[in-house]
Length: 215
Image (cartoon, helix red, strand yellow):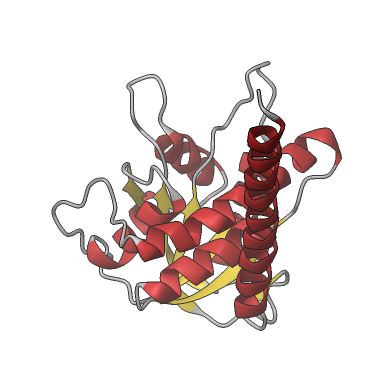
């Protein structure tokens, strides 16, 4: 390879590295700033909403252990409902196969915790955060919602919800530290950049469908 060609390739590589780092930094700052004053960690301070939206995740890890993201989102939803801060719960998650059903797992555990079944609604097509927040409006008819997930996820979901003209606040489930938590947070940086890519290209949910009345 000629020296000039090599130098040119190095410059191109460095350019893309700089653009990538800047995109990650800017996306993170915009999403965090936008969420200020809209996320809550205690039920006593959070405004009341008709619907709490649980953003789904798998119940079990590959090793068979309980997924702490699941456990803490479940606990947060129970806490919010029993504090009379939401009237209904919509669980939005992936049900792409018969053997994988995030919404039903949450529903079963909510019922075990004393949440009435008629207060729970399932969204089986919440494949991505974008799908979940758009479908809570277009399918479940909600223009205002309390999103239930970890803080970093709530921040991103609120940004997306507001882009689609949904008034959203977030109730923060307990976070995860350690190696597993770090891995998820690293992925979150890329997910935040993708928020703006999706907005730029006007990405819509994979599926919509018939409306479901929440009452």
